[in-house]
Length: 249
Image 1 (cartoon, one colour):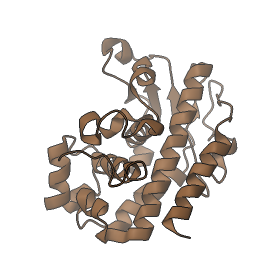
Image 2: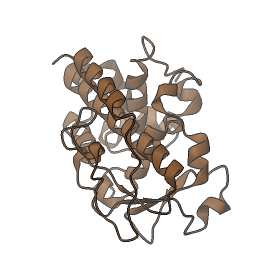
Image 3: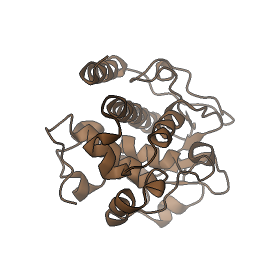
Image 4: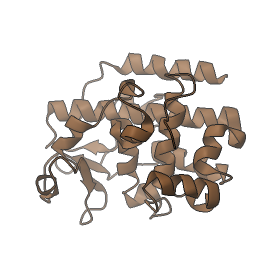
């Protein structure tokens, strides 16, 4: 199957899922999403998703489900590009240098198809950190409950759908976490079962450090969260504008 046909399948699936109802779970739920989201979706055969806690209202759940669909779409797109263009692709070299393609491919598979039993996204400010960091915290990982992620109100105001990419400034200008589906991947990787107990982590976060890793420390480029986020935003933007909308490094 060609890269173009894979891309078409991704967008066709998005359209078919547009009317999916939001999914919530009761207080003790640790069950993966049992809905059309967990079937063959957006280029993945066995995609899994965290549960959404009952403190998330209907609007919260709808927006979180939309973000999770974007997450599945952009990772499928990134993996498809990698399979079709390999390690000599300019996008791969830009963000991973000569780092192990097996690591990168494995991370994509882990993020989308590994079990998320026990993972929970909640919308109540149980630790008070959202209120303590208004207009800054879009969410946070709970150290006291490692499988849980709190989504703050600021997430819904500040994070945008993938359909906005390239229309609100370059990726360098706004950052990849500006997009809800990419920000979700960053939140996944705070959860120990997703990061493989810190094998993938936030070792470098500034753009200068991320680029330096790819050029001079590829061993860590393929282990650094933000290298993945920039790679995915960069390759996806190329589907919107020829050459993408990365901006000046």
